[in-house]
Image 1 (tube, rainbow, N blue to C red):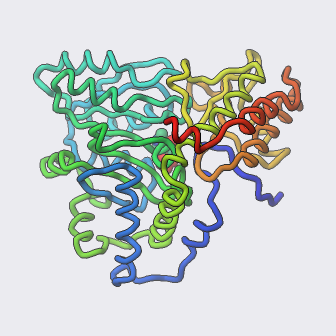
Image 2 (tube, rainbow, N blue to C red):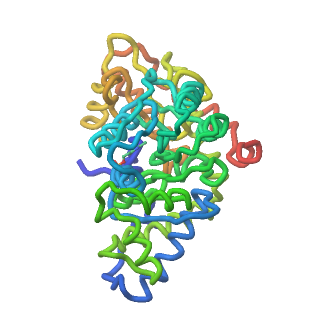
Image 3 (cartoon, helix red, strand yellow):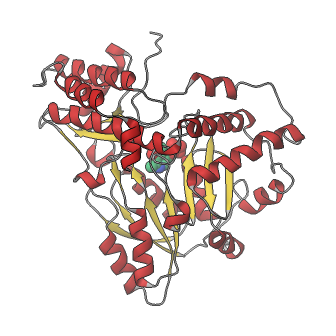
Length: 396
Ligand SMILES: *Cc1c(COP(=O)(O)O)cnc(C)c1O
């Protein structure tokens, strides 16, 4: 079956036609001035999306996972202690990566559906009076559970404890879709990927790196070559790259930033909030609830829907794919089968979202779940008819 149905997975996201075209360029010599002319605006744009006041943007031919690896391998040394919480598949995978790099990871086990536990983080930092903890890692938006964490709160915890640790934030499924404030939150390394909020194909790890992290880089001894920020920054100085860059993706990135800024970042964030809220109204009308424990934790980019007892979320996802050609996200790890995920980030309109909610309902009916066809769609329609992006952006 060949379809142009939108996807409702929390990445990769739907690629706007303009971005597809922007990526589709003839071969361009990356050592030529033409490349520098394309590359520099993309870098400058990323700075604005991350809200960076200082530091450097690094674009690696990789994915978010490579961004995680680059963040630690460039700034830390084997045996270094780091502090983080585990509350979903993505926070888990970053921990696993750190452990495989020989880092000493102090893990605060946190129930899935919760976010970064601020009080426990602060207590752990206070207890570390000799300042052995080199970095605190935080997953801004846990894509497995649809939970957002309070990064400003983690910065406050560091300040309250008077602790000098670096703050690394995984913003792969939030940056470009939810407010992100690298300068205001004092983030030392922010990690994004091209295929989520930036609406591009996968293939770029996008990082913001603070001056403090760049200082740590000089002393760090974990092995790195392909991801070495030092090589990257040396080449940047001449508008180039230490190796062949993903030129088409970088062209697309400049276009993506132009699109985000034409819409207005505040409006982009308000649009995501509005579509997320419409999704949550539908979920409530189905008699279900998000996996995120409380409204302050609700993600505006993905909703993990807890399915009724005795039902299997993965069955719904499989049926949607095979019968209707529509992609939802399965539950991962601890919540496998217990949730299915609706991604509502990137290029998405009211009309597209409603088609996804309607498809989910058809699947529920097909599987004999006790859900009234149209109930969730109607709840979303009611909300969408009466809410406006501009009003939400003004209120934010
Ligand atoms: C998607 C995602 C990743 C992994 O990114 P890849 O591009 O698949 O390597 C990491 N963290 C979060 C929060 C994600 O949503």
